[in-house]
Amino acid sequence: MTTGSPWQKILIFTLPMLLGNIAQQLYNTVDAAVIGHFGPENALGAVTSTGSIVNMMIGIVSQSFTTAGSTMVGQNLGAQKYDRVPKIMRTVLTCGMIISTAFALALAFFSESIFAMFTPATAEPVAESAEEEIIEEPMVHTVATTPHTYKTIHNAEELRTLCDKLMTYKEICEKLRESGIDNYGYDAAVLIEELEGTDVATLRGDPNRDYCSEKLMDAIDKRCKHYPLQYIIGEWEFFGKKFEVSESCLIPRADTETLVETAIKLLPRNAYFADLCTGSGCIAISLALAGFQTTAMDISEDALAVATDNASQLGAEVLFVHENILHPSPTGAQWDVIVSNPPYVCLHEAEDMERNVLDYEPHQAVFVPDTDPLIFYRAIASYALSHLAPGGWLCLEINQAYSKEMTGLLCSFGFRDVTIIQDQYGKDRIACAHL
Image 1: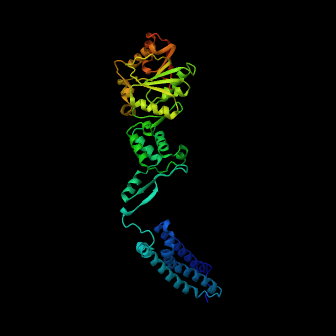
Image 2 (image 1 turned 135 degrees about the vertical axis):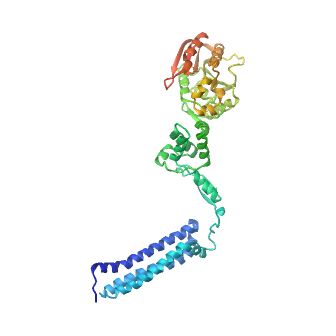
Image 3 (image 1 turned 120 degrees about the vertical axis):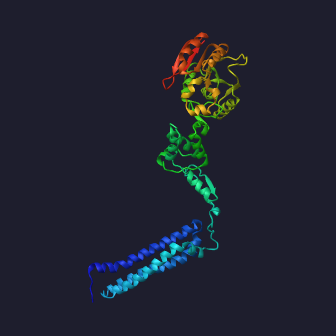
């Protein structure tokens, strides 16, 4: 009787158990594959039909290895009959390996046929072609407080198209950067936050999240063509409030807030203001919300429609009037302060402007002839002489290139204490004077 070396004993005792565990793992894997094949909604049918049959077959192999190992360890080892163990081991291992290998190969090459044989009659049939697929899943992963958006995919082509559109924040930034957008990171964050409901904190915490909504993709394409970010999202903040904007009016800008701040400091809250060339109404509405009685005028009826909507949404009381300040209608109205941000960019300055302004913002509200850069200021100063109350003030946003000319113009009309005020960027931006 052979006693055998220690390592041979360990191998003989543990190898059957090890093979049994491997077979058990195979059993669990196939069980999971069966459920995954039929989908979570048909898991019960899969387990009670196909799963039970396949699991039973693999379970036999698993239990055979385990039982064989236990028998050999319990009986042969206890009896110290080591000379019988190698022969039994060879028999069990050879049969087990042949059965396991054959079964694994059968599952790999004939899995679809095997699963189809045991598919329950009540189970949802697997589509035979891509055209029959109907997949419903969230288009965008959103935070818990944001409702999910769902889209039905009817065929493989739609699915491929959807996958092609998936973009992360980093990929959106790169696409905007390649298109020549300077503030690509900021623009990408604003588009995702405004159109997808993902706040900046969530965006920074998960920059690799995928986005694919058609609305966002269209917005990115527009921005790559330098379409203004403000027009894409349809609103922009000015003086602490969000204003609706469209191509019919200028986009409110931070430097114009200096005009509002200056005007508010001039007179008590019960003063009467007129805003000429109001555009989106951001100046007039900001003054009205500050407690002033305000009238706003513009030549563009479309711009007045936007301004009216803004006043309604923000709860501001403003009287809007359709008026051409270059050819004003006779009126006896008077105001304590007249403010205006009229067109003042000369045509020759266009080459230095950004594409989003040149290509999309209304030129009527931006440009003046090179031959008469102060045309609107001259008309406004003349209008103010007839419509400002005694001691009334005139506050104008100006072209920094013509601040000296503006001082001379206002003095020529009889205005006093002409003051040029710089904006937050240190540029001459506001001309202020009174009668």
